[in-house]
Image (tube, rainbow over all chains, first blue to last red):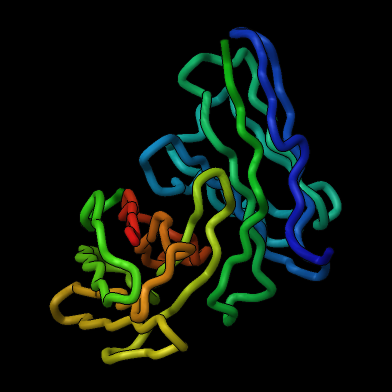
Length: 114
Length: 110
């Protein structure tokens, strides 16, 4: 399978705990995006990487959120001191270049904060 | 969604045609997208318009009018498997991030 993969697919955590999600983009895709989707809403942009550089962060990304893409391949999204409002589907997408118009989405990580 | 409006829900009959409308407001427009999303799954790409006019791809067509900030997705010969959420979104900014509407939940009935 050469699609975008995400791990874990589901995560249940208690409020106040830290969680980390991983995204493996399609090989050789240098552009990587994180989105968050809550029930009944469309995906909302969180952050963008071009290779290893994080070039844009949404105002939705509070200081409890941090994302990395250390070698320009896989990426991680960490949420510290989780809150119930963080419960959502976290989607990762990748695309090969600026000219490419399609973003390929992974299956997402569904986070539930109890 | 950010400056994007589309109906929340629609219902249509198997075999029929349905049109899902989308209006948007942006100054940094760089293409209008439609994605399909089944419940609990990732969005999958359907169509892309950057110039005015109609783009046809099998049973799916998408139309764009940039001057009116308007697009629609046309689904023909509806099948039960077309029951899903349809996301309208525009691409913008230097990073080409996607800005989506809330999505239109389409229910196809027998």
